[in-house]
Amino acid sequence: MDMYPPSEPYDQGALDVGDGNTIAWRLHGNPDGKPAVALHGGPGSGAAPWYARMFDPAKYRILLFDQRGAGESTPSAADYETDMSVNTTDHVVADIERLRKLFDVEAWLVFGASWGSALALTYAQRHPDAVSEIVLFGAGTNRRSEVEWMTRGLGRFFPEAWERFRDGAPEKLRDGDLSAAYNVLLEDPDPVVREAAARRWCDWEEAIVQMGDEFKPNPRFADPRFRYGFARTVTHYWRHGAWLDDRPILSNMDLIKDIPGVIVHGALDLQGPLRTPWEVDRAWPAGRLDAIGGGGHCAGDNMDAAVVAATDAFARSSKMD
Image (cartoon, rainbow, N blue to C red):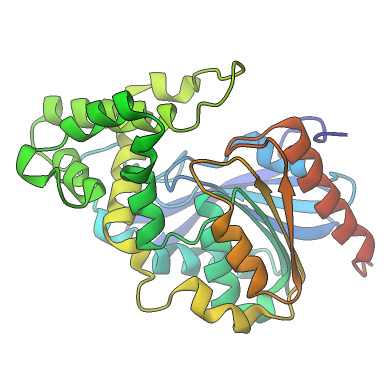
């Protein structure tokens, strides 16, 4: 089995988390099942229904939620007037805790994909007693070196696309932090400037996930509101190092050394090279790296199957009422 069949949420709503923000949430699976929370990527992508398909709906109670500014959470990062200063890693970690308490969960499995993996590790390090297991997919730690790789290093593999991406930044900022340069454009008062920057940023996002003949453009990037909200959120986080520089994930792995986990990662992931999950694995005695040969950053059948195998194994090992 690659993934479980699609399902509709059995409950959904919105939680007021302060700062003028509400978080949209959905519950899937078995109301009496093992609790799990899925942390989406981006940051800014929103929680797609496929996250719930990584879990056996008969055995898990799965919480999906849209992080601040993303998906159906309000206010949207796609609205220029939205205050991004109250959208940080610290805010989102606090939101996860609010959701855990809302649903009276003592400890839950935390699943994170891409950016969500860095968020999952950060949350677990700050609230280890609230985490029973961790499953990561396309893992990263959002270090400055990883952002530099995403915005510059990958240019050696996609030189034409990277040159277009670089040239979309203001000339005086092209030799510095490109995420910061684009964030300047995305906060410009002129909507034409903002839309052009969002388009160029998302074109680069599309370029760096391409691998082989099976690549298909992601339809979400056809939506100008999604493009702007996504690009604005990513660059806002990246230019600030996701506010993790003073508490880097790899330096704090001892805080979760006893929490069991699995990292599923494509061995040929150019966007997030295998070095980072390998380093996380080495620093995590209770974790295990499952490197999928031929896999890239996006989901493929072998990678989906490996994630499902991990969540199935944790469901079997869980003491459920």
